[in-house]
Length: 415
Image (cartoon, rainbow, N blue to C red; front, side, top):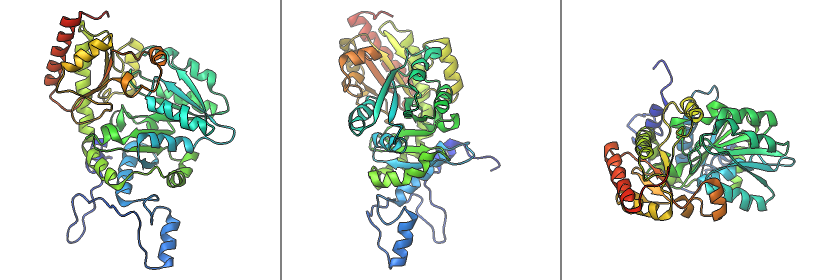
């Protein structure tokens, strides 16, 4: 091959062992041992000095294979590969990221909202109790791209260690001008920590655009079968945090279990195809919902202004992700729509093979007060859809029928 394989090819071949005389398993079984045994002190010393052997908290063959695959994906197109560690959850990946950045003189962490409610709870709760100073910045309504960074610029003092943000915001799918944020943070000496869970490396690779650290939730679309809990952290080569990652991972103990790594690698091999299929389905459903009288608002990347559309075309040329949210106007309408979609499961997460739907006010963002949710535009009528690999015509027919039922029973929502 005369050119580097695409991310789809990299993912499809991830973790497959090299051929050897006598044959090898096409899929390696998980390595479940928690500790290794050594023949003598010299061998033990060499393994411990290498820093990734001897004890599962230090490393594991199944975990290593998954990390190698993620390095290839997150670092695709970069002159130097990033460093990567997988963790016990996406929350643990964010914790690990901030542990490598915060220190004396730089204890402030800026979080851009709306975002995943668990990120805010972690930073404002346990981490604040340990001395991190959280600074919450509310972004303007999605679509107002020109005003996005006005408030961020005001809080970027020399005490800020990191700015935590999502390129596609949870749950309103607001699109962030990542290159502009990177430039702003770099001028202030602050690291950019980007949660890329909604976009995945198949739609967007933040390190390519200058981000310093990238967090992925392996529990979601990358594993993709609703049977894994895990996260990943990738750090740009040459960033000071990269030198701390291995030690911090060991000391915090936020490591992934081998069987979860095995399942994550299994899911990762088809994640590119699922991401493409989900993105096509989300685009079709967003178009349908935009024209339906039962929907008060459609939240989909690039859908709210010409400026956001241009940003989406620039940042997400490969697809805008498999997520969208619909505001039905109130809780009764949202509940009616859910009951009219019996084959679309209600679940407080995302990224399964089949389409699921969640109610952010009762799940991902229930830790916020009603007033906080209202200020961020997260109402009781908001439903967040994670689109799977079903036939798109089936999904559109099901959603159209369900929306027609809402419109017929409750009356049209005001646009």
